[in-house]
Length: 199
Image 1 (cartoon, rainbow, N blue to C red):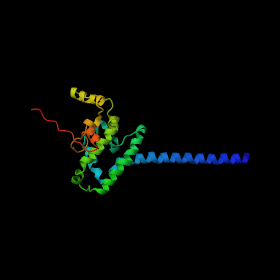
Image 2: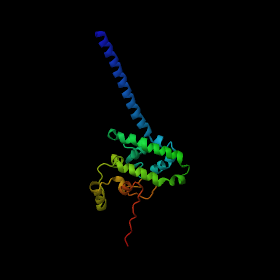
Image 3: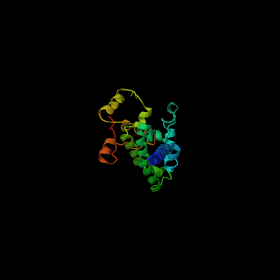
Image 4: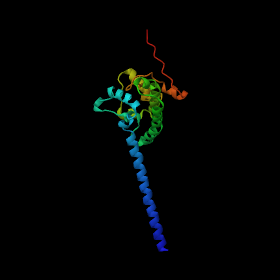
């Protein structure tokens, strides 16, 4: 009886150890994979992404306060609390981007620009759904200058707005701005109405 008990404990101890090793290995693969897929070098390995990366390097966001952001800093939520968003971004957005790379011809900037509006829309809608968490990582405790900016920032509290609702076209080549709430409600791109200039 004691021999059988020792054998059982030995087997169950080995199974627990094997299980623990497998769990640690799976965690290492998932976290390591997420880190590897978030590197700018990986993003720009697709030819189409070299265009927006060059735009980033010429933008006011690059080099500001001594920081040179990469793709992940805006397009992949960071931190353990947002890890599920990062994984989802790689699975969903990454798969869509790879399929588009195979389907469309991005060999020139002109061909890339033919799809720029839809790509900008997808990025904006992602930021909207994350409550612009990647913007907030760098822009903490913002103090909007002037009365109109302060009034616009009140929309964050009163209308469920988020950074990307108002701050579009900051880094990459300009495309018409989207009304993100209307786009979400209608399930399609709805452009913002152009403001009419006062006489």
